[in-house]
Image (tube, rainbow, N blue to C red):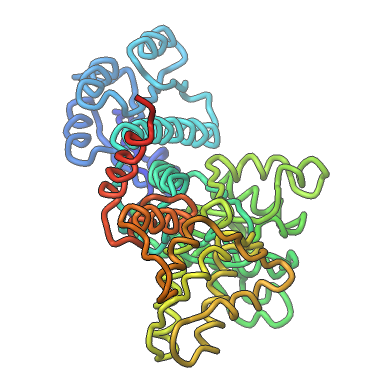
Length: 473
């Protein structure tokens, strides 16, 4: 049994119903606890705190209504589904008024409907938890697990909001769709989501772009011996390897029509068929998909199934372009320079100051991946001294920006290189240095303060002081 599976408590004095329900839910992949009456049910609930409770209404000792009232006192948010006979529907309605999530009648119900009711109740609980967590994030402004995002270099407020959202939806079992252009860091976000989720299984990634339906099915679902020519032994698919963990499907927008149908069934039913098998298997992997395509536009033109799209994007994370995160460019440059120098066993070079304005003005169509490629290529070609801008301009090619126009800060700072020129005053030098730092940092005061060797608070004080002095009385 998967330890990450939801736990259901079944309370009923009818052993035949108790056993049949327990076997059914265990086959569906749930962890199941049982109790014969309300008193035993409360004791089991206190020990194990299950996510969902089914209870009969008519039981000796403590009946279902009494049990539910006591349970709501212990855990008001836990959904309770009551089981009533056909002749006691009035009691079921009374239970709904007391806070029951739903009721079912016996013996006239199907087991598939039983699972649907359980799934809807658990999804409601997840939604409540997400809303509560999001409210907490908004109020505190703090990440609960900042270490999970340590591999994503940023000081951007928009990225921080994305981190908060990822933390909010991570505990859910619902699918997540990560969108954004190539090179924006979709897999990094998927790995962070898996880490924050606390799921005990592995993070398994696969690129499904360009796979035909047979290869897709065999890769995800596996096959039985003799399923097709060359299938000489049983092979588990990657869904089995991701049990209790996260299955990351990259380039989901390239998926063939037939494969889209199979993925939809997996998402809806949490089950799949290995090739050559007539027996379904349950999946406990959480699905996270990513694409650089506009799936909504593909739905409009009939190239992507609408039902699959809405099933995938229950939670949607959209990553911004690097060009929209100008303040992160110096930070990413420092990170990639250190990584590249270490990987090539070279000393870490200093960077020519004139490089930063060019990077800030460049559109970076390949986003973070393009910047990383530029840095590694520059380090590979660099031998000694200051790392100049020529390596980067060559990589930018025809898309490189024009040289930035000279500013008043440049004029003041240029006087230092002229031995005969007038030295600037302290006030002029301070203004020039701050102006140049803010220019290089793309207006990001935190990055500019880092260039100047002071704290952000210190820079704010200087800027506020200058603002007060320049304001008319």
